[in-house]
Structure formats: C-alpha cells, structure tokens
Amino acid sequence: MSADSVSDLVSRYGGNLPRYTSYPTAASFSEAVGAQDVENWLRTLPVDLPVSLYFHVPFCDELCRFCGCTTSVMRHEDGRVAYGDLLREEMRRVVALTGEQRVVHHLQFGGGTPTTLPAASLRQLMRAVRTFFRFADHAELAMEMDPRHVPQGYPALLGDLGFNRISLGVQDLDEKVQEACGRHQSFAQTQSCIEQVRAAGVTGVNIDLIYGLPYQTVDSVGETARQIASLRPDRLAVFGYAHIPWKQKRQKLIPEAALPSSPERLAQRAQIDAVLQAEGYQAIGLDHYALPDDALAKAARAGTLHRNFQGYTTDSCPVLLGMGASAISMTPSGFAQNIPTVASYARSLADSAELPVMRGVACTADDRCRGAIIERIMCDLAVDLSANYIPGNPGPDGFAEELASLNRFERDGLITRDGSRIAVTEKGRPFLRNVAAVFDTRKKELAAASAGKTPTPRFSGAL
Ligand code: SF4
Image (cartoon, rainbow, N blue to C red):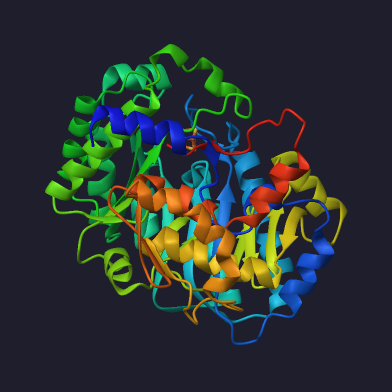
C-alpha cells in the first residue's frame, strides 16, 4: 500500500472499536443483570454440556505503564493465599449450581500475573478443580507467566499439575521502548523462562508482542519479531497498544509525543506480519500467528476457530465459567462480570451467599445471530449470510442495511462479495473489527443513547 492510500484508509476507518471477544461486548453490560440471573443461567445448563474454566488473579510483581489491566502489587503472601481461598469458595458456589463432574476442555489462569499465587494455593485450587470437574482428553491447561518473575520451582509445579501451555508477555525487546514502558525484560529472561517450562514438560508456548508503543519503529518491531521467532513459540499474539489514559491512570506516564501515528502503527503491524510469515508462521484472524502444525492454525484452516475473552481459541465450549475479581463468564443465556476490585469481591463472598456478580447482559435471539456472524468474520475473515451455522438467520434480505454499509469496504478493496458470501481480503485484515462492527447493532444503539453527550471512548483505536 502506498503511504497516501494508507493515510486515506486510516482517516476513513479510524475510530474506537471493540475487539469483539464477545457479542454483545462488555460495553453492553449493565447492573440490570445480577447474581440471581446468573445463578438461574447456571442452574439450567443442560447436564451434559462441557465447560471451560478461567481463574483471574489480579496481582503482578511489578506494574507496567502501558498495561490496561486492573492489577495491583500484593506484596504480602497472606493476601495472595487468602485470594486463592476466595477462588476456591467461588468455584464451590458455581459448582453447587452447575452440578459436579462436568467435562472441562480448557482451563486458563490469567491476570495480572497468576504465578503470584503461592505454590501451595495453586496446588490446593487445582486439587479442588479435579474434584469438581473431569478434564477431557487433550484438555488445554494454560497459565500466564511473567519471564522477569518466575517463582522458584514454579515451572516444575506447572508440569506436575498437568499444565501444557504458558503465555508470556514480551511486548518489545528494544531498551528505549522498555524504558518508556517501565518494563525491563531481557531476551535472556524470556529464553530462560521458556527453557524452564519446556524442561518441565509444558510444551505449548504463546508470546504476546505489542506495536504502537512509544519509540517503536518499523525496524525495531521487526527486530523484536525476528528474535522472538528464534525461540519458536508455537503461537504469537500481536496487539496494537491501546492508549486509554482516561481509563488507565498509569498510562499517563507514557510519553505521548513518542507514540507512533496510525499510519506508522499500520506499517509496524505489516512489518511484524512480514517477519513472522517469513519465519514460517501462519496469520490467524486479526492479530494471532501460529506454526502451521499447531492446533490453532489447523482450526483456522478448518473454519473451526473460536473467539472468546481469551482471544482466539480452539475451545468450542459454549460455557466459560470465569472466577475471580473482574472475571467474565459466558453462558448460552448471556455474559456476566464479577465485581472488579479485590476488596469488594472479597467482601461480597464474605457477606453474601450469592455469586459475586457485578453486571452483565442477557442475550437476545438477534444477539446470537449477530454474534455468530461477527465471530465468523473475526475468525475466518469470511461469512456466508445464507449459512445455517448462523442461529435464526434471516438470510441476506435481513441485512440490507449492513450490505449497503459494506459497499465502501468493497470499493476500498477490503472485502470481496460472492453472492451471500463476504470475504475480507489481506488488505482488509487490519480492518477486521471495522467489518465486524457493521453487524453490531448494540454499538449503534449505545451511540444513539449517548447522542448529544460527550462520551468517554469505551474502546481502543481500531488501528
Ligand atoms: S503487562 Fe502483565 S506484568 Fe505488566 S502490569 Fe500488565 S499484567 Fe502486570
């Protein structure tokens, strides 16, 4: 793409958009949905429905300036042990509603840095998980780690407990970028963390990179991608830095003048893409890469990839039970989020016998239909508006307005159309969220509801 055409596209398709890890997105969550609704949803799950589990641990060993997550440093081990106890208590309440011995396909610990959970707490929690649930053959058990803080003995513990995947943040290896972000992490630390977990039998390795950080250049992000590819992680996620200082105060420490412009971000993204593909990685969806033999790459080729709050996944479970402060759960009836702060989450579990739910959204038939379309666009870069995989599909005639909105995408070479099939081109891949947003009526309703007000942007920049 020429520089001019890039600027043109940026000016026409910029703006703030959801990442579509769910539909409806978290922007539609409200306190109209509470603990009793979620308890009913869980109580009425079909008995043979498998589930996936997510445990959120909102503590880190140190805080990075760029990070948009709600995390804190919990120095006292007692506090972290107490949090592990809360996770077990919440799981006990959830299982009392869903019934025991459901099959689990995926389990993930995220955060934050979930390895801040003391080893004994993790052991106790996993023992409880294995009491309440049954893991499917080949279930994925994943743990996020910080290579700068690998607790002594933790890699062996993960191997022992049956974990088979870790996910590491690297973001960028350039020292000037790291200094501006307040995150110093050498290549040797990342390499050592991977070697330790692989030696313990944990074979799956995900690495996160970020472009759009202060002082990054096309050359510097390309060099980071090359070095990281030499470690042969089987999956990589490449995110655009989301600068949301109005929401995340610590980002005020990021030197804004050193942030790349939108066209520069697009060029950085293109450079990482070129390096990773040259290193043998397959591009997946909006922002993921995997070695061609990896299950995620195979699912992408087979059209069986899914997207949930953890991003792209092979997990097809319609139920994700999220536990911990701010964790999000998904059921066929709707989505729900727990109370976000640790203190209020703990108080809720201590003072009430209910689930510590803060807000959520119940799904309508229209949400399920649009959610399926958006998921296929985000995963396959294509959707057939006549397909019967779309629940309650009204067919192309039911989407006349959306089809008209897609005309400009077609003129710009971002999509092609063949009958009722819409396919996003390679040129259109960075604009995947824009294509998905065409089918997002909830976003339009929220925009209409806030018309005339000066809204705080809810989402990060699309590019
Ligand atoms: S990037 Fe990771 S380690 Fe840094 S503050 Fe965020 S969650 Fe914590």
